[in-house]
Image 1 (cartoon, rainbow, N blue to C red):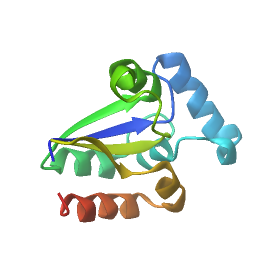
Image 2 (image 1 turned 180 degrees about the horizontal axis):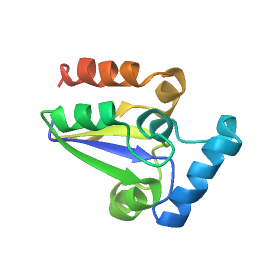
Image 3 (image 1 turned 30 degrees about the vertical axis):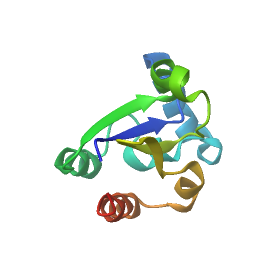
Length: 122
């Protein structure tokens, strides 16, 4: 395993961040990024998540959907659904946690345990 790439189902930029935060408050059930929902509060990264991700013994990238597509679209097109966590190996990019799996994770601790367990497989 060379790297974990976390891709939010949200676009980059301050205006998008503000709109996302507003949507979390006004209509949380319609919010489309489970990764954001689990790892961020209203405006900032959750402390326990920040500590966890900094403790990971692997390189990590955190990208918004538009940033990922700009950087990787020529190689992978639009073959991934977001949010997603990808693992970069010698074979290329593989899904580490899929969009469907994110829909089943309702707690930050479950996400962190899932990441730890799967890292042992690589």
